[in-house]
Length: 157
Image 1 (tube, rainbow, N blue to C red):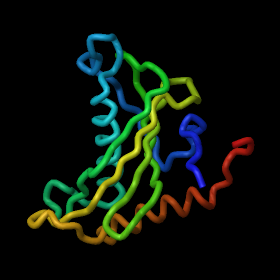
Image 2: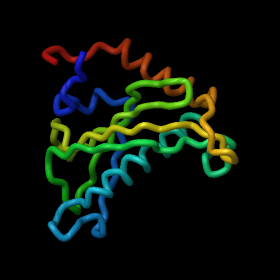
Image 3: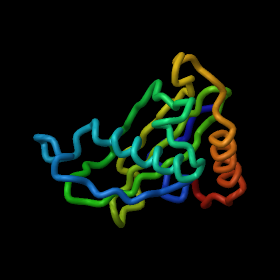
Image 4: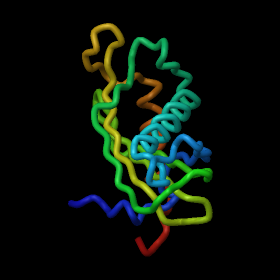
């Protein structure tokens, strides 16, 4: 089974959607957002969402979610100044890791401008060895997948 084309994802396909203003310094010499900025936007939205929903502050928690792999596909140019909407959704959870998807959308545009994939592994702060996903995080991640699975998706997809 192949994964659906990310260009077909819409705002409603994501578990959370947050507006994020771009900054002047986000543009590169070509006049659009630098590639690294997309990952910064994804990281900021993910960490704020997880901390709000689980109450876990990873700056002091005994368990950390470390990024093991990322990718980003770019479908539309994005340039400062604009406030983009960044969506996050849980794609898959394992025993010690989670794979997340991100969608970046321009205002008043239903088509996805960029799509990110993100594999995060939970590790012990001291040993840096993989550990099971913390219970509060697992509960949150699984509840978002469950709620999306029970929400009717638009037809024609």
